[in-house]
Image: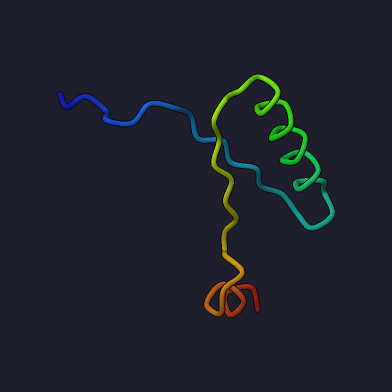
Length: 56
């Protein structure tokens, strides 16, 4: 069995428009920063041309 080269966790936040996803993510980011835990936040689809097309 191969050992995973990357440690960490993946947290996905999903829900309908207006459910508070952005608010939850902002609070999570603040808490992680307070605890000095490195985190990378992303959004799918992205805000580039292709992401906008997908949203439409």
